[in-house]
Image (cartoon, rainbow, N blue to C red; front, side):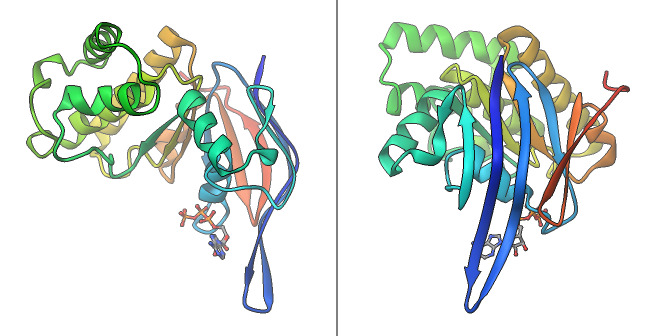
Length: 231
Ligand SMILES: Nc1ncnc2c1ncn2[C@@H]1O[C@H](COP(=O)(O)OP(=O)(O)OP(=O)(O)O)[C@@H](O)[C@H]1O
């Protein structure tokens, strides 16, 4: 099944008198459970594309179907609801809430967005902490963790609401190389265990080799390249 279908997708920005086309007539699909990377030089449109996939920004024209829903027609509150139910986010600077512990950060989307009952929240948070190897840090605050540990918490949080699609904007940018590879392996493990689709952007050529497919952005144009070497 296809989780993402982009049809003649265009995003342009008006800058004064000038129109900047960030994404130009993109057509592509991504299957459920895929592990893919958006790559391209600075300014090529990676963030623009991720923002549209995350329903944080609307296309200028064309259609963007996520899980069979045409997200280009959603209004702001429908988009927020759709995001909470279907999409998880991982950021390069982790974006954990500093006043909440590890377990509270992971629980947050279950409580604030999905309002799940306490016993269910506890069980899910515990199994995710176990899965990402962070159980021993449950009561710690983000400033007491290493970069790799913070990103593990962010991965668990992105998976907490059982999102079928996780978007990661440069998830390894602030990590050393060995930790970056461990985080990518962990994301892949989570994909295998939960059938979650992962889309991540990166500048790092070694990291992009882990993706099964590369979506290459060049001057707003998107082309797909299958990666035969993906491990
Ligand atoms: N809000 C905006 N207003 C005007 N132009 C924008 C806006 N956001 C992005 N752009 C332009 O759209 C193009 C694509 O930008 P985008 O941020 O998507 O690139 P990127 O590939 O994510 O770059 P980087 O790797 O540096 O983050 C650039 O030319 C940028 O200047």
